Length: 85
Image 1: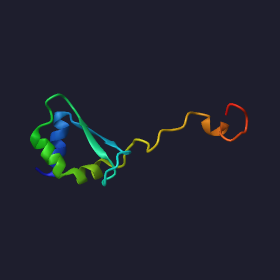
Image 2: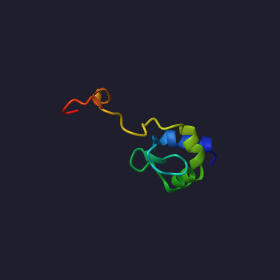
Image 3: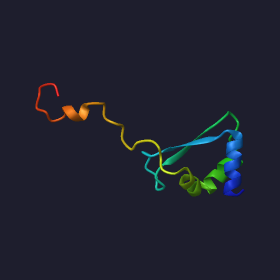
Image 4: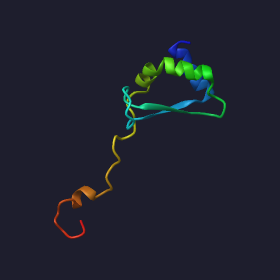
């Protein structure tokens, strides 16, 4: 199966991926597939593994932040020397 055929089949079956930026993997993250029950087959899993690097590049950088954002205003209170900050 070519990469284009794989992507078409994943779309047809409603399978989508979430790329996790924080996971320590040589490729810069892991892939998590979600979709309707029974949509993922053994053949698709093998093809995803075979095209993993291309799929990660195709998905692009993760949209998830590397670290959670600070609560609003937390930065402005830090280091003021006032009690309770």
